Image (cartoon, rainbow, N blue to C red; front, side, top):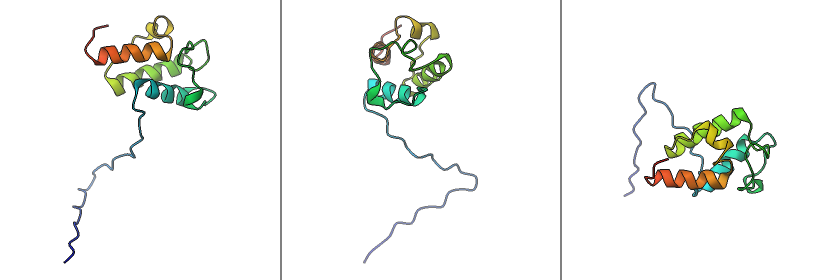
Length: 108
């Protein structure tokens, strides 16, 4: 005998979960994908140089850098100051190290 499991109906007004977008397994991968999405040239993630200055290279501008920092806070629970992205955390490589360090309990 075959049994089928019936799914329970959703209550009225219940929100449907959005489609899950795969997130790269590494912080660097996530940053590359996000910067690629935000870049004005819409570059593929593998075309993003992780050592290039994010603003000087044109990968992000002031508006998209704010979006990037908001995404980092949402994704990793790490807050990066806007001034840091201009200075010491100006590239993906430095950002990834800082995010990983803070996510593992180190203080800024």
